Image (cartoon, rainbow, N blue to C red; front, side, top):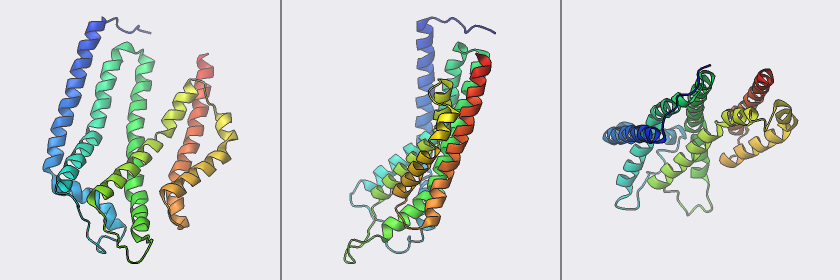
Length: 247
């Protein structure tokens, strides 16, 4: 097994500077490109509102002179972050690669790829399932019939971003469990022992982020997370077996 290459601190610092420059340059270029495709960008962002079947009820509004321009900037920057993320992971892997053993290179590469794919899966669940149902419920909710729900663009994008980020991070659960199992902090027996507690916590969380009385909506939201937990149990078991084999 080859040893990691010995490189001086200043060489590492110079390489890190190059990596950061490439990452920021990519972010700037993609942000400008996303800003130029305004119609396609906002067609994509506003489509969940149409999925909720409330788009024609009342128009969306902006209450400040700079609201739409600032929303355009934020949306373009957020889209650029998502698009650049795999390239950043590639740069990070290239920076870490000389310091890794061959078996570690494969593990890190797989973790980076799985992390990004799971994050995209979480965003997809939020985009196609969670946010449309949450928007429909919150739009229809009334404290009084005299209060009309005029939704601002900032409020819409803020809620959309928060829910999407929450689901994206929540879908990283298998990666977190793999890391904890690799470090010997959790194992399959522990996850099985607290399975019922985890199920209750997951369903409660799903009920909070989708505040509806619709059982179908609650099931659609909680089922992917429950499946992720079972996947985490499987991953913990495989990781434990591998640790025992290497010991």
